[in-house]
Image 1: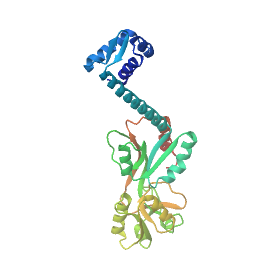
Image 2 (image 1 turned 90 degrees about the horizontal axis):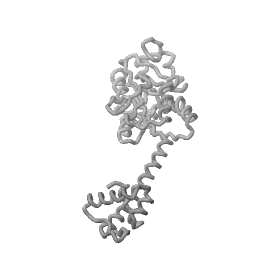
Image 3 (image 1 turned 90 degrees about the vertical axis):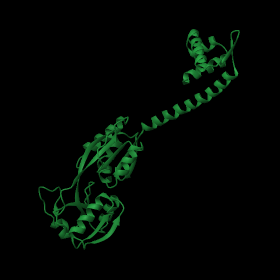
Image 4 (image 1 turned 45 degrees about the vertical axis):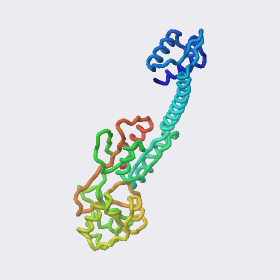
Length: 301
């Protein structure tokens, strides 16, 4: 039985008449009569007693109608809730990005998007790429900007930006004067041997960037002082900006004049791609498409 079947039976019960019920349902009397005959035959029970032109509920029919009213009420509430959620979803985008991407997004992406779509709410979530992929898997995000995620079936991947293993230093660091421009490197090049007397900060060796930093420091400058270990890239940027030390990290984000990237002479060429990812079955709204276009076309990545 479907919802329409319940509606037909309940309408007959309310009017106690096939003729009146058919008029209320905007169908023919013969069509409603055939429906009732088919329904009673499929159920194997009689729902109505015929008394002249009146249709009176049997005990089974009364139970059917009472249950049908509950089912119709629940269906109505469900449809209303789904419509409200659908309306709400058209007015928001759940967007995830790796910690450390803020400068790029808040400078080059969000201002243009909000100008174009003042009616849309961006629900932003900063986390690790691994966690962001889990949120996508569980339907908790619409789109995410991730790094170091394997391409998997059921998802769309759009390459956005290459990031390189680099040395992050304050904008006024003396190391900038020692660095040399070399064609095969994305940033001016410095040797780790020139940094042996520097103080370092790092993310944990269990993190992606932290594992690279740990290996390079142990190999080339094992006696260098590690002043601080932080939990995430965002904190790493702030620690370097605040003068606690320099850091080996992937060049995840744009930096302002307070920070500079240097390429590391001893590091093997390591570059990874930041990608936009979303589920292939995502019902893409116009605002989502525009957000993707703005990120893809953002200047000075």
